[in-house]
Length: 233
Image (cartoon, rainbow, N blue to C red; front, side):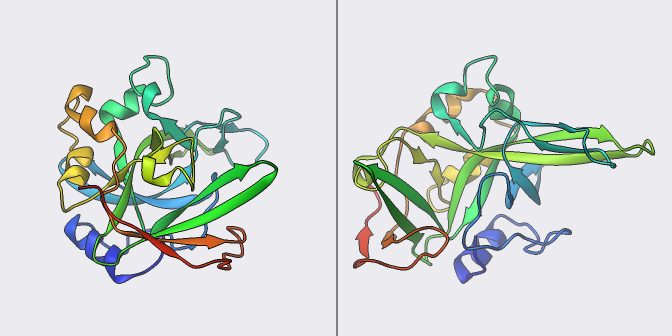
């Protein structure tokens, strides 16, 4: 997530304070288990909050002051085919705690033979991007008996999209847009019946992207000419 005009416009359309109390998280490269900014709806109000990018947390008893840490179970993504599995980590969150992650773009990795290939996909500034996700709230007590809350999140991933098979063959993030109403539908806390969201779990590119082949995510140096991917019709 970077501070650009498209994201400012998106936050204004979501009717949230662009600078939430704890400060919106800006970074070109965010790793799983780090914090990123999410937006969710609660009591008919849109709220921006920073959350750990790892849906399942557990108490960290090694610290002098109580807190939560990422669980040993990998959960930075939640697969679409697990959303309706009753005992899965995202089952209840899918029904009650959906969020979006405003972003300028995202990166993908592909392994071909023994070589890794990396690409950055940057959305057009006129088409604000948000990825659909889930969030959870974790409540605990510190050693003084004070209650504290930690928020976690994951990105919902869908089957691979034909236009992205040369970039990533395993999955596609759920990409949402204000323009076609998909973002508002995902955030609507009044929607608790999963069938109403089934059509959003079909991979769809809703934005124009510029794709940059790069050497690695931490350096993001372009190694060949960028190219464009058009939105689906």
